[in-house]
Length: 351
Ligand code: NAD
Ligand code: WQD
Image (cartoon, rainbow, N blue to C red; front, side):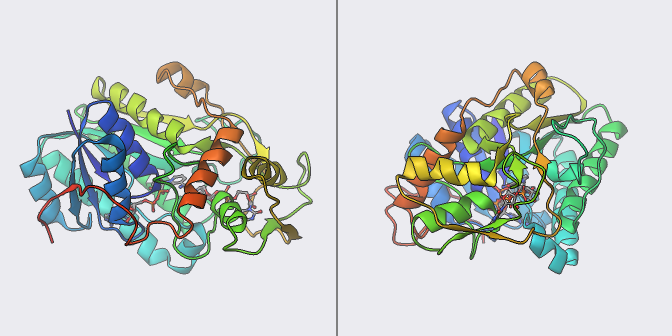
């Protein structure tokens, strides 16, 4: 079975490629590398010892996308591609609305044209806005607080309208909580551009000496130690959730929405302490002001995914920190051009 992975060179996409290849799927990746490196895909090939096809292409390139669908007998699409930085979305709202919405519309139109109607879509816990209570179930009130989150909310609505228009469509919307960690090999992981916005890459870069100390945004929340609590999920567990969602969507029509998290919350200070334990070094930090827009607590009710996808996150906080550290310490500068890559992926001839 052939699966098109949009955004497959990115953090979550590259880990999902590995799980798909190891499960025997044929994989076709489309990515414009705007927030990633082709080296992640070389590493995917190296880890799996499997071939797949990569098109360096923008999803907005309708003609190019049509070529991909005409060349490959695609059975389903996992759609990761998009812009994802909350703060940047406030600065560049048009870019976020344009890229995230238009690319998804074009993708769905081309899928329809080529009679492909199975889609797994990356949404986010950000669509719960400022939740009153955790754990958060899928039917909790929605409401995003920034342009990035609103693109996810709008896309969820668009996909539901699409599925309502024809029974051919089978769509799985996955709301990720806070993905962290990396593949066990230490060869692929999260590789943010510039100074990281998110906690775990920030902690890792302090641990490796690239940044001086972690700014802990707020210590006066109503939580176990006053710092923000989140549901961190290992990226490999998340990737495996996509395979379960894919299996489910192949056999049904309509839209299903699932939270992918662990159901457990950890505070910022607990994460720093956990990282210190596995890295065997201290992580300097200072308490800073609250970050605007942040909430105190956010963790998932995962019962729906557990029951309907037969999926549960298995990796705990220790393993998440260990794997993040292995990736960061063996690749202090992320994917470097001169880093070893023993084999080239089958790059399609597309420019
Ligand atoms: P990422 O930036 O690492 O991966 C996204 C990939 O899409 C990148 O490789 C980028 O180059 C590519 N891309 C972006 N715009 C494109 C376009 N127009 N055409 C082709 N390729 C394009 O991000 P990620 O962390 O792997 O996230 C994947 C998806 O999951 C995103 O949709 C994101 O919004 C969503 N998500 C991420 C998180 C998180 O914390 N990482 C949480 C919730 C949801
Ligand atoms: C986690 C905790 C911060 C950085 C974001 C997006 C969300 C989703 C996942 C895409 C919070 C604290 C952070 C730092 C800190 N992405 N923190 N110092 O905000 O829960 O979610 O990523 O869909 O949409 O908003 O994740 O990792 O930024 O923050 O103290 O330098 O760490 O205040 O409590 P967040 P995060």
